[in-house]
Length: 148
Image 1 (tube, rainbow, N blue to C red):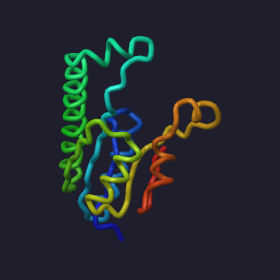
Image 2: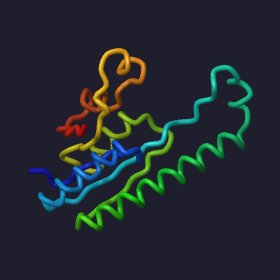
Image 3: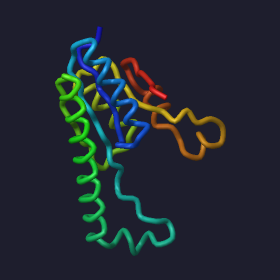
């Protein structure tokens, strides 16, 4: 059915539910997974955009923090995959927009299914906070399994 599953995570508790579900599915199907985490590009504050964007040290600190966080998230995913007996590859996409990076990673890694979590927000909360899951659903060329 699926030769490879891509699991998207941001390291949050909710994303952890998606990770566990994706790993359980992969174990049942005996297929490998690709776990991807995306860190967004540097975005200076609107009230002091010139000062913040001009400070390369702050930008470097931000990138290093993102890389460290991504490494922690992916190491945890590797540990969970090993415990589940699932072959796992990890990918960190720096300076990316999550929905675009997830769809692109699924295509480039030959994933036949994307697994990700969603808060299930509605109404104004969804409008204000956006929905990466909804964007992946709209853009993906493979099935997307949403875990709530």
